[in-house]
Length: 90
Image 1 (cartoon, rainbow, N blue to C red):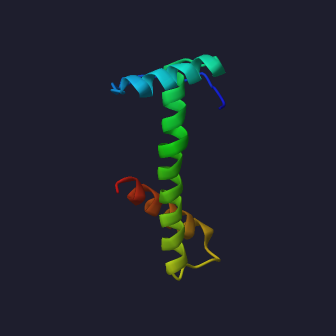
Image 2 (cartoon, rainbow, N blue to C red):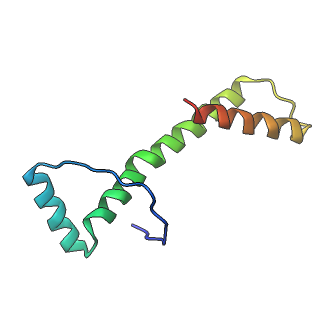
Image 3 (cartoon, rainbow, N blue to C red):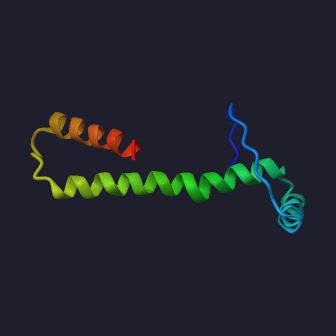
């Protein structure tokens, strides 16, 4: 898991069973990684990346369903950006 310097500004509280937390803590010790970092990286890899990929797929499907002019890149680019923003609202 790649680590980069980021500014974290929101706090989330999550409750774990004793067993879940113990296993998480053991894994953190084995990998020499703080528990909070493991949780953040797992959320990023499992949920956020998947969400972004699904949004891109929706935009691609929409583009494929359109009869877009391929010779006018500025128009196509605006349509892509507009659809991408719409997907963010879903």
